[in-house]
Image 1 (tube, rainbow, N blue to C red):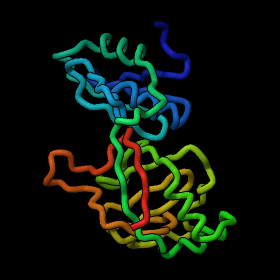
Image 2 (cartoon, rainbow, N blue to C red):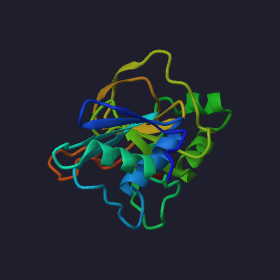
Image 3 (cartoon, one colour):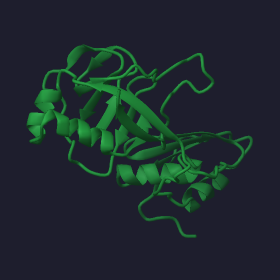
Amino acid sequence: MSPSPDRILLPCGDSAFLVELPELTAVVAYYRGLTGAGASVGVSAPPGIIDVVPAARTVLVTFDPETIRASDVRNWLESAEPAAGVSASGREVTIEVSYGGPDLAETAQFLGMSGAEVVKLHTSSEWTAAFSGFAPGFVYLVTTHERLRIPRRNTPRTAVPAGSVGLAGEFSGVYPRSSPGGWQLIGTTTAALWDASKAEPALIRPGDLVRFVEA
């Protein structure tokens, strides 16, 4: 199979490749193809692959050069098929939210909706965990439409409470701990997004399907 023209592989030293992709949806599909995230049947990476880390336009793959050759990793990355869909039996995370955040009214006004319509759209949308960053447990969620797209606040808050549910750009997300932030806050949740005492500390992992429900 010839390499995809939309996929650029860049060596990072002797133990990693950075794969550049044209857009976020391509990153999500490619990450699922490599890892099987969200699929009913697991996909196994070759022995020697250490980690697969998605970002907004890239996927970083690290490996042990004593276990697997760089050429074999490159062949695997070039031949991997994107997996665009999520199986009905794939991993799904439900987050209960108490809506009524400090920016809900302003968000609704900006979007030309009522507050109730914002809540209905937020809860009826299927959100995909695209990548994590900013803080442990913070995951950038995307959906299939842009009706909730809204800019960040002009003036970020110095402290956003843990559990705050927000919107910014095409993303939704949940603050796992108190931190500065400029997202539009529309609700709160008591869900623990990050628990370092667990084998899998993150409640939401890239590739997961996330649904918000009213508490």
